[in-house]
Each structure stands twice: as C-alpha cells, then as structure tokens.
Image (cartoon, rainbow, N blue to C red; front, side):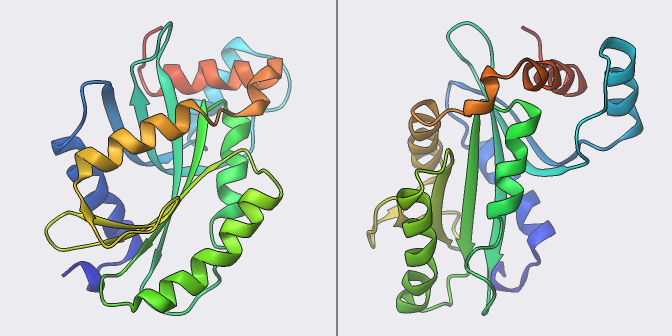
Length: 203
C-alpha cells in the first residue's frame, strides 16, 4: 500500500514508475545517489584542485536529452503521510545546485488518504516562499495513488488524475524554464563534470 511505505521505499517506487513511463527525451533515472562516495572524492582529487564539494545524497536524478548536452535534474522528494514541517526539503534541494544540476526540483508527495484541505494548508506557505523569493527551483506537490497516477496541488490544482508520462512531460518543460543560476560559477561547472563521470553520462 502506497500510504504505508516509507520515504526510501517511495523513491524506488517513483523511479520504477517513471522508468516504465519515460518520455522520448528521458534517458536515465537514478534513485538515492550518494555524492559523498570515495569514488566521487577520488575523481575530484584526480582532476581538480581545491576542496571537494559538500557531502550529499540526491533522491532522484533525471537525465533528459538536451540540445547540446544532457540536461540533469536533481530532485528532492519529501513524503507526507502525517503532520511534519511543510518546509521539508527546501534546504536540501538548494544544496543540489552546488553540484551543477541544470535544474533543481522539490517534490512534495502526499499520501492518497490525506484530505485535500490538509494538503492545501501545507502547499500554501511553500508556494508563497518559492514565488515570493523567486527561488531558483521547480516546486511540485502531488498526491500519488495506487494505480500510479498523480493529482496536482502545485503548480496548479486539479482533481484530474495525471499519468506518470504526463507528469514527466510537465516536469521537463518546467525544468527547462527554471535553470540553476549557479551554473555560471566555474567551480560548479567542474563539479558538474565530476557528476557526469560518476553517473557515466557522455557529453
């Protein structure tokens, strides 16, 4: 049952679901990628000077086909089954920007058993922060159902159930229009290169 799974288990469910429904532009999906491994540290030390980047684990990584090179999306997933901080994941998703992802996504996933009013109360303050401070992230909030469909609460609200294919297509468009501003930093670009080597991504 979806409502009974833990967050780590949900990441595997989302990875498998998106993998099975992936769009033509989606090349790879990774779940629970540890960027503090010995391999990452060694690649960094072999090729670059200075300190290694902060230690981090990324919940989901989507690799889309870009115009000139792969488009990397880092996603922080927070699963809500009961009361917890509505701001969960904001700090983590912003830190993903240091690794050179093209776009950063905070995905709040709500259990299907939760009432809509409960979800709306949690989405509202996050929406106000993201929009009010013009944060450089893509924020999405959905319920997930047993049949693998999603109901959106942000960036729009509807009772319509969207397939994983629809969600991927919408997410890709949002990410292309919301890029990581830290990519202008040379150090961040070097971390991006190490990330691509670690994930075995060409280009």
